[in-house]
Length: 314
Image (cartoon, rainbow, N blue to C red; front, top):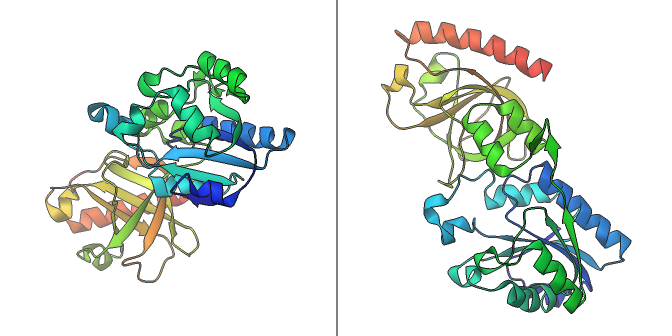
């Protein structure tokens, strides 16, 4: 997979005729993956030179309606890492600006999709609209395809348990701590990438050393305050089971700003400064204030046993 930050660079690569899909793809859930699978099928069936996924460097609502901007299921880097395994030939990351938002769909099709990407087939999801004011409906895109000589495939939604899979429903499930539902819709456990920072060392003194995590993108969706069963992948390392606390650490810190701390089972080393990926498996209990460190330590020992059982059954 080649990632292109400038669409014009695709011309220099000369892949020939392309099958293209466009979207935000926030979360890259199973509905999005269904669209990508159809894209790859079209490429094969029609003998296209390349498959191209066009996405954006930011969520369009952050430009068009900032007040309605949803929290992100995947940052751009997380999304690109997930796309690596899909088989797409090119991922074009287009800067989304007010100028982009004001471009009418016919101009976008002509100037970007056809002229720059040599698109001969467009594959999009059932709820896709293109261009200023979302004017480019599926019907109009089909009409444009008939005029300009490209095919259009509209991929139907994925339905699980009578519910259409969508990024909105996944966000709602995570905020409600329904991580099982989120995982079914995503096709994997919900995760976030973070950097390990130095902490106070109090947890280590109790026999529960923790990695203090910092998420660089303030728009990333973080699960609500609670204790969770997790799996953690340090960059370049193997995956560990563990437990995570999201909250203000009221027993040790007296409350305050949100903290994210993870304790890894069987890990012996220094993670300071390293990137880790935290897969959120299941909530365990609410965060609470204990009478002191002895009571907290006793609770953590119980938590560890419960989390180990959860991860063994997963």
